[in-house]
Amino acid sequence: MIINHNISALNTHRQLSSATNAQSKSMEKLASGMRINRAGDDAAGLAISEKMRGQIRGLDQASRNSQDAISLIQTAEGALNETTDILQRMRELATQASTDTNTTSDRGEIQKEMDSLTSEINRIGNTTEFNTQKLLNGSKDSATAAQAAVPAAPAVKGSVTATGTLSTTAGDTVVVDGKTFTVAAANDAAAGKFTDLDGLIAAIGADAELSAKYTATKDGGQLKLEQKPGTESATAATIAGTGGLSVDGTKTVAGSAAVEAKDAVEAGAGLQFQIGANENQSLTLEIGDMRASALGLTGTGTGFTTGTNVSNGTDSKGVESGLDVSNAKNASAAITKIQTAIDTVSAERSKLGANQNRLEHTINNLGTSSENLTAAESRVRDTDMAKTMMEQTKNSILAQASQAMLAQANQQPQGVLQLLR
Image (cartoon, rainbow, N blue to C red; front, side, top):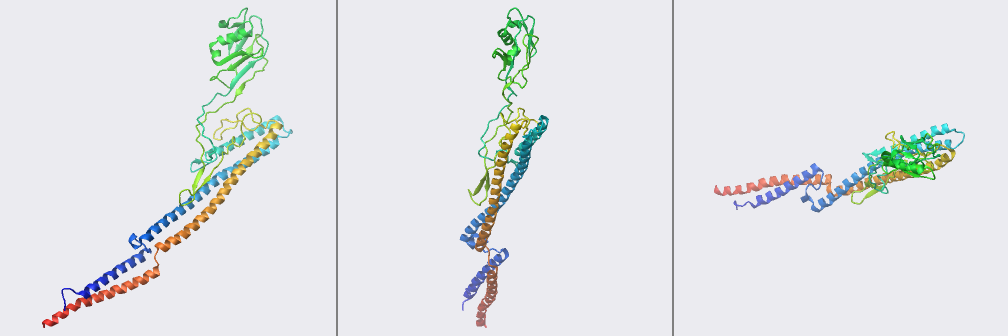
């Protein structure tokens, strides 16, 4: 009989420790519902399931991204819906103005509404935003080229021509912008005196104030004052005569129209929607410029008004010339231009609608993928509660039995004491 080493007790203690550890792990799994609570539970399974978790969370976020993209598209399309209604009204007005049952006054009132509606199209294009991002001003279209800042230019760059007969009667005068020049016996430019047209031109050139603003020349026997670069003005020079030059009212201002100051414009870039869990799984959407100029509703030359009565929609300052409906010919041509604009807006709305439908299918696909991947991750990571309960019951019984056997093993050395009696 041996008392220094109780082999039975040592063996039973080892079995008890094993059963207790197994019972502890079973209880942990039951409490968490997870088969893998630490890397030691299943190293390979942990790595696989964490990769799956990344994909699942990415898919769920991509689904939310797609829903946000749909909201953006609906914002843009809703604004274009109103633009279409405006264009339909403008087409109706152009058709009304095309018939000669209207008087000039009638067409003038139609023109006012046309300009106002065009300004509203500009306002929609300039102010429609989603999360502070402008959608319809061309900034979401890669075809929009970068533009440097444009400084404000004078309203009119051109010239004024006065027609009439130059008098040779001494004492007769020609008044140019308030400066008086007199017919005399001899040319004296410094004194503002002249005998012929060349002498008058020389006298105007000798005047410091006028020569700074105009270049005086002959134009077919007429006096022509051309505005110098940097001094252009919308107000033409005034020319009057008390006999020196009879102005018959044929005064013309020719040249370029006003150029408004504009801020620098960055190159447009399409919208990128991340609709997948991984890199390069995105959708690109481009939204064209839906303002009046891009739709061909404003411009210069034939078919457009001479005045700039169309604003950018955010204030009342006119910056563009709208479609001219002041006569039947221009009003009829405006119908075609407006119809072209309607077709352009409709095509843009169709594109937006197609992308919205695509995103809705994307959301459905992402939901299905996330569901299936979650099921796969669950099989790797989650515990089978029934099986774990069965194991926990077994381990609990083993632990209790080991405790009882350990008590019995500890009693065995007590038999030695019987030999001492």
